[in-house]
Amino acid sequence: MITPPSLRIGDAVLYPRERAVGLIYEVYERGSGERPGVQVLLSNGRDLSGFSAEEADQFLQPVGHTGLAYEFRDVGQLHADFQRGLFAPAFATARLLAGFRDIDYLNTH
Image (cartoon, rainbow, N blue to C red; front, side, top):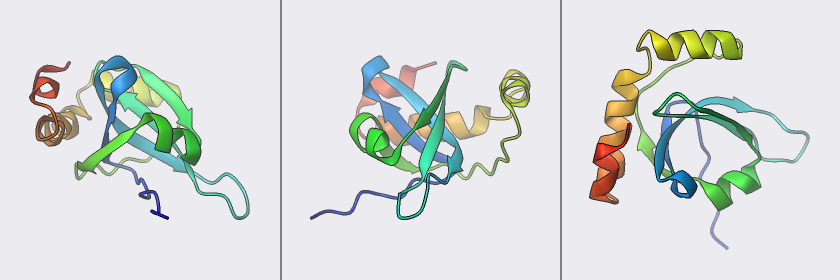
């Protein structure tokens, strides 16, 4: 059996359902014996909110780490940080990493 990858803050993911690139901005504990869940921000600023580990395995495709270090406080701060461009360098790296999988991801917002 293949062990699913452990996602961490700063990892770039593909979200094929919307053909979008996202960043993991938070990893949260779910309970004893359960793998952590993740929260995802898309490159257009849309917050996908939380995915359990099982949902992440099903809906997200990890493409690599962007170097982003982020401490999530609340959604208001997340939105403000996006608006002021804090995530821009990480999304540029994410699009590049995604482009190695599918060149069309280089042109996502």
